[in-house]
Length: 371
Image (cartoon, rainbow, N blue to C red; front, side, top):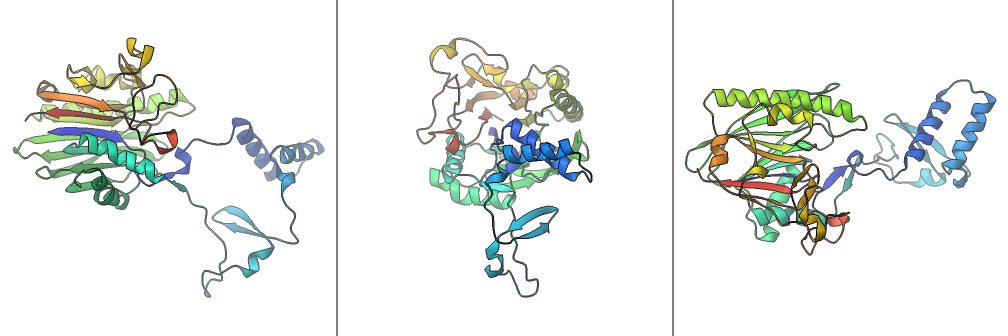
């Protein structure tokens, strides 16, 4: 049985908030300051002068003047329509609506989607766990139409569990024939505000009638306030450790914990799992192999990296219970579809030519056990 976990960073479209912000911090601060000043009912002379300065800095003086315009409010936002608004095609005679909608997502380049499929096909796991999938319709299109382009048979079963942040960061599982999903449970493991992160518990029957219990999750992302993110993550990890120990206490010894933890293993927020349970990181197994960095970087171990010569900061994990860890025959990491922006450098697929068409900023981690 080969199992793999991959933060695929969406398949065909990705939420704008998850992309790098093209605006500098100065521009963001100017916009926020101008917004605050414009909301004030009464403005002093100095505040009015500051509004003029901010308008100049943000380039408002470059706006092309029009004979007339229409200002409309849609979904809490103001939109300015120009002189030709009256001649635009209307959506229907009942509403006479001739506005427009700003999309919250951006399309992923088809070449990047192909590279996502390329790395999955290269590993060809029996059980594939994915993080950051936008929806099941996208996953099925990817499974049925994109994977076969790379001589990879579509998976027989797929399931997507929706998270509650509404940004397309769903958790998915795909299974080959012979592997059957028996039960599924959702555990709320804490979060922030009114958003609680899910831990998905899968009970899977293998072709040999063995039972595998997989705990899949996606933990808190790093924010500007690292202390808050670490506090949230530690609470989540404490709950994961508690659930894992509960399964082991019930005699369920074939347990796997997988997903994106978004922090290196030495981080204190992961201590409840790495120090207080017997779950073992797949990267510590003697069979764990990956093509090392090229050049001088292959000779040392960077803090937080997977191992010597694999100097990318570890964020994705595959943890096995002791029984499964001892039965592991092979394991590894595939980062050939990642683009190395800076040193260290590593070998990539020839089709990966830039960050624009890379599959993901995360590697695919896999392990194979004999049951």
